[in-house]
Amino acid sequence: LEKKNLLQRTYGGAINIKRTIVNAETLFKRVEKNTDLKKLIAEKAYKLIKDNDTIFLDASSISYFLTKLLIQNNRNITLITNMVEISSLLHLDLKMNVIFIGGDYNTFVGGNIGSHSIEQIKLYSCNKAFIGCSGINLANGTISSSISEDAGTKKAIMSISKELYLIATNERFNLDGIFNFSSISDFHSIITETKPNNAIMTLLEQYDINLI
Image 1 (cartoon, helix red, strand yellow):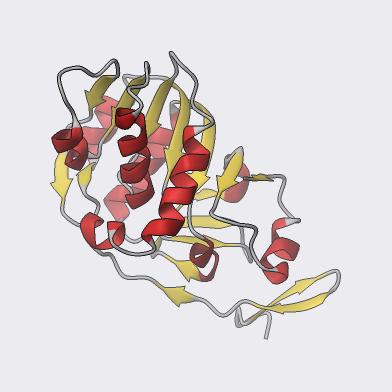
Image 2 (cartoon, rainbow, N blue to C red):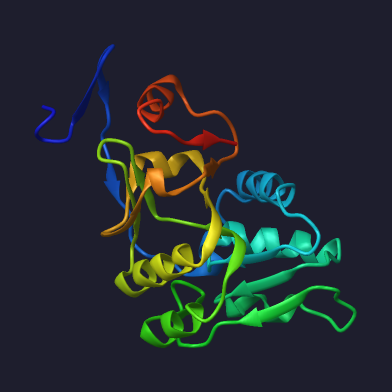
């Protein structure tokens, strides 16, 4: 069963890890799902951001809620993002300096991705990056996206940041995207709405990562 990826062998026995491949959905469809949970995660991430930080938010539904918090509180930071959908939230009195990454706009991602985006991302550096994902596979330690160009863009974002935070609801521990873009161990912390169930916590113990 372990070879068929139906069970994960641990020191305490075997844990059921039935998984689902997730299809790409548009940003605003994702924003409308599990809204309360995503707002909780955004609030946790918000508390990690200090004045004068330079942060990168990739195009994700949780990043959308996090951006709203940053704007509502008029934070004095520099925000780099490929999530062009947030442009409608901006106003003239913002203390926040916003840098938009160009490239090929993707409706499902809700932002710019691809080779042109990657070239621009590599021109910058940031203190913290908050990255969304389609799936977190604790059996092999991979983080995935549903779109190949998005996966490549996320890799580029990760390469320019000193601290990396994975932002995801608990359900992502049972889902997979098609394209792997990183390992769990690449991140400093996973920010999620609440402590996952015991089976997931047992698997997480294999990795040197903080859970917020």
